Image (cartoon, rainbow, N blue to C red; front, side, top):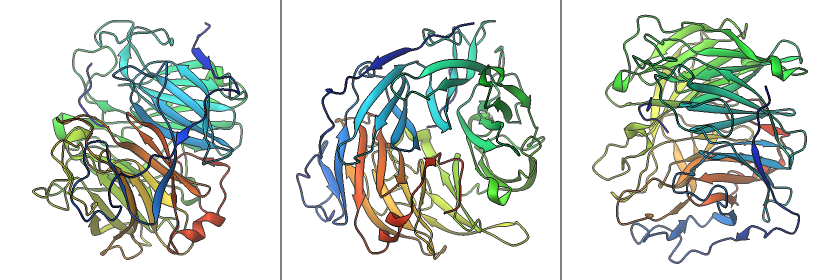
Length: 462
């Protein structure tokens, strides 16, 4: 989500769930035809293509049962899924994907708690000033001397008992971050993206045309610190609402490349030296793109999909009156000379209601060897699986969606949707964790690909 910023022992509250806790609820049954031929779904009605169905749902639960406890991004490791929330994060056991269960809910508020994992460490992005860096903090005054925002680091060696280890303040906070492996296994880096500047604040002074790089010693994460603030965008024009910095950076270390969605434009970076990234190219699309939100490489590293979060995730942009090139994805090819060339656009082909926030949001590859296939969350537009092997003519393969939440526009729907070891997992803002299964000859080869860890912003080849 993009919107203007409102701007020792560390103890987190962990809600432990006993083995006898109630399992995930049964998969909701659709209440109308599943082929999408009879118009927009009714309020809360489930609709899906014949080749996709929801097999499980884990609803949000205490302590994440307040009106603003919105589900956010996800990461995966082994048999666990980690789901961020504005109130903290949840650890789900997905060893049996059709019967997932929450094993811990960690209360640690902070917008938006973008999440990633690496070995025994978990990282959360906090992009709002807090009164301090503890999990007991409250939303704070951005002009206050003690206001904190940035990265929180947890120990997840015991999945049922995560421990808060360390905080790192970063310039303008941390909206999102990407995990970058160091040249040796002893260090990981975090590329921290955040909007800004915000004049008259203590942590986000102009011009903010940089990212922050946090180094985390794996053996001593308490020594994590900011080691670089490369100014990658000096002199560029500001994006929507005057924002500098980046919204999201996706890294592909095997290719020594990163792609950044940086509000007003997209960027391609050389990350062969992870502490000294170099800007290779900047691309703009002022006619169609509003907020450059995220980026995804194809497996070969020869294409980049950039998404546009027109309206910041809180607007209805999937209406028949809105162009199919706005609030959409743009597919770029990457030439051998490492130049981005735009080829086509993709937007879900189903019109949504004016009561539904809908726009391109978080997604990642479905690992189909030899083809370029992606799954993506579209907020109330649901979850879409689409093929961009033909970059100029992308096509949807499968989808799942719910109808409007309320008679008026109301924030909801799929924040993120990722494929992991045979299933699609969707973090629904208000409904919790959905587990989906696709059965289609075009995606079935992905079921043979197994992953041990998945952070969507840190790509690995398959």
